[in-house]
Image (tube, rainbow, N blue to C red; front, top):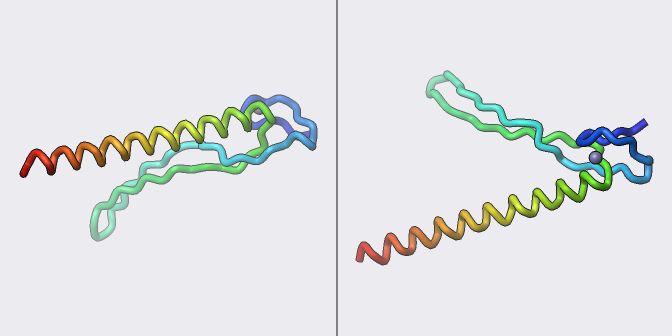
Length: 86
Ligand SMILES: [Zn+2]
């Protein structure tokens, strides 16, 4: 009996969608010959219902858009910085 792993609703077998769901971030510090820091983000493939799949897709789109805007702002800042230095 499949249940949505996001909201817990019972799903018809035809309404089961698979999506990578963010489950957390682990911060690792390795004390080897050098100290190094590692960040790993964990996604797990889970079964979700129609409503949640729409929500997840929308959230992913928004996140992609946000990171594009951030990159654009950084690029503009670099351009401005170099044009003022001259
Ligand atoms: Zn759901």
